[in-house]
Each structure stands twice: as structure tokens, then as C-alpha cells.
Image (cartoon, rainbow, N blue to C red):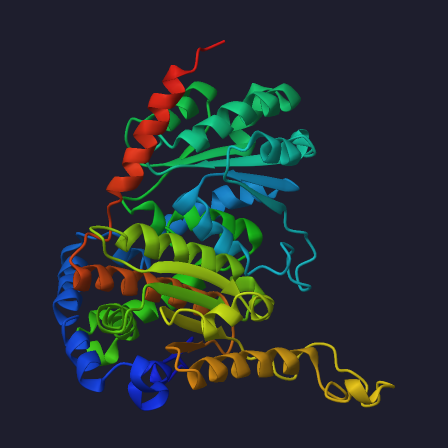
Amino acid sequence: MTNPPFSQELDGCHAARIGARGLDPAIFAATLERTRPALEALGRHHDRATLPLLHMAGKRDDLAIVTDTAARLAAFPHVVFLGTGGSSLGGRTLAALADGGWASAAEPVKRPRLWFLENVDPDGFARVVDHLPLDRVALAIVSKSGGTAETLAGALALLPRIEKEVGRAELPRRVVVVTEPADNPLRRLAQRWGIPVVDHPDVGGRYSVLSATGMLPALCAGVDGEAVRDGAGIALADALAGDPARSPAAQGAALQVALAETRGITQSVMLTYIDRLACFGLWYCQLWAESLGKQGKGTTPIRALGTVDQHSQLQLYLAGPADKLVTVVMGAPAGQGVRYPRELGDPALAWLGGRTMGDLLDVSQRATAETLIRNGRPTRILRVPRLDERALGALLMHFMLETIIAGHLLGVDPFDQPAVEEGKRLARDYLAEIPAR
């Protein structure tokens, strides 16, 4: 049997390990049993094909189109991705698997440099665009709805500048739009400029990482899209089995909700000790916050990165308000990296002599988790022996399912975002008040 891509340890959240702030076994068991209807609903959605997200892990036919498009864009030294929120964070997370944005040593052709323009800060936008050789740039414009204000504004600012450099006839070769198959402003813009369109499936933006939205930047960076979906399929199969005791996603959702309901946990910290998962933490924050923050419910996600945040946030986690669940994501770095000489010329450095940089990271992640546990702070550990496409795909699917199941437990719709839509409408009202010049 193939080893699982990652493992989940919940002992550091239970009263037997951390004392009064931990979960009572009976409460956890009862909350876990409450996830059964959610698992059954996921099974029905899968069988009836009524939730497209659940079929993305098994799809392969769509990857041919995305692969061809990625190859076309990756022929240029720079690829700019215009998108925001779910139209960007998933792609950034997957692309981060590539080694510094370059192909492996076994592949002599360099991969392009990827640029993700997500904001409409004119200074930040200009600092990137003004220094790019626009005659050597490809562009992907991504918006599921086709009406995202920031993405349209970026496209309308950048397209004319690229056209000026290369001519309109060249745009179909180096520009692509990803949007839903419906009439919308972005699709109409693509038609006016003669730009090809890749259809975005009917999957909400923050759940779209396995679709063309995430796969296009991933493939441009040299990530194996099929392996990502294979890993996602492993996590999905555990949930579709219908047994909460066999589903890490159901267990994670029960953990988070039970801690919130009975132990005053209001914040969910994602602390990863793997640099290539730094953006994964941002992706998780959007997924968890936008899906569950409704009707006065939900917990606040926080992204942290070890060992950086051992020197900044950890003091608060250990000695501040006891309102946090910390999920520590551990790699397997022991023995990796630079090995230091046994004699470093200073007795004060003897602790590092003969060890590797990876040894230091390994003991740091283990010490942080154990210190949190000894201080009675609920601590979940995710162990990722090898961070590759399969493992990342499984992590992404795990947390999408954990979020959906938590929504069922909380009694909120994990797929809408009414408060966000209100803010978007108000922003457009304000913009209409500014005189056009």
C-alpha cells in the first residue's frame, strides 16, 4: 500500500495531553458523529455530480487544454497572472512547489518567471509592470465571474501596453482569459481583443485550486498537474467512504468546531515549517474565513511561518489569550542542507557543530509543538514526509473538505460570501461618485 501523503495527529488537542483546555473525549466523539450527515451529503453530491469540486480530482480531459495553454505562455520569459483571491492564491500555492520558478536540473530549458498581480495599488502595479520587458511577456487574466473589478482594471491597464509593444495580431499567442462559460465583461473583453478563453468550471473561486485557475500557473511553473489531482483524490476517497473515523477531514472539522463551541477557541493558526507552503497558509486563510465567517460564527484564521514566527508570534500563542488552535505543519528536514564542521572555533557554537541546517529546522518544529502542548495550548500536527505534488494535492483537498464539513456543523453555507458582495457593490457606488476625466 502506498504511504499516505501526510498524517494528522490530534493528541495535542485532547484533555488527556494538555489538561483543562483540551477536548473531553466524549465531546470530540459526539462532534465527530455530527459530521456523518455532512459526509453523506458529500457522497450524494459526488454520485449525482451536483458539486463539481468533488469531480475535479478525477478529471483529466480538461488538463489537455490547460497543458497546451501553459506551454504557449511558458514559451515567454515572463508570465503575468492577473487575478485576486481564489483566482490567484491557489495558483500561487501550487506554483511554489517549483524550485525557485525554474525547471529541474534534469530539464535544460528554463521555466518562465511568474508574476502574480493581485492588487490595484498603482505603485505596486507600476513597480512590476514598468520594469518588465513587455515584448517578452505572456499574460493570463483570471476571474470566474468575469466581473472582478481589480482584475478588469489590471487587464485594461496592461493590455494596451502589451499591444503597443507587440501589435494586436500577436495577442492571441501570448494572452489568455480564464472565466466561466457565460456572458460577462471579461469574456466580452476577450472577444474584442481576439484573446482565447479557457472555460472556468462551476467551482467557487476559493475552491477552484484544482481547476484551470490553479493548474495554469502550476503547469507554467513545471508542476505535475495530474499528480496534484491524484493526491487530492486520496483525501477525497477518505471522505467519500462515509465513516467519520476514517476521514481526516471530518476529524479536523470536528476538532475545530468542538474547540470553538466548548473551549473558547476563536482563532485557527496555520503554522508551517516548510517555506514552499508559505502561500498555502494564505490560501487557507481565505478558504476558512470567507467560507465560515457568517451569522456571528467561524474562527479567525492566522497564517504563520516557522521559524520566523517563533521570534514574533509564538510568545502570544504561548502566554497570551488561550483562544487559539495551532496547526503545526512539519516537513522532514533532518539531515538535509549544509552540514557544519564539528569544530566551529567557539564553545558557544558547539550545539551546531557536526549538524545540518535541516537538523536545526527539525528540532525547532518539534520543540515548538511540544512547548505549545506543555503550555496547554491545543496543537494539531500535520506531518508531511515529502512535499511533492501528491502531498500538496492531498492537503488542498483535505482543507477544502474540512471547511465544507465545518460549515455543516456550524449551520452556515460554506459556498457563499454575502458580506463580501455588499462591500463590492458599495465600492462601485463610491467609484461612480468620482467625476470621470
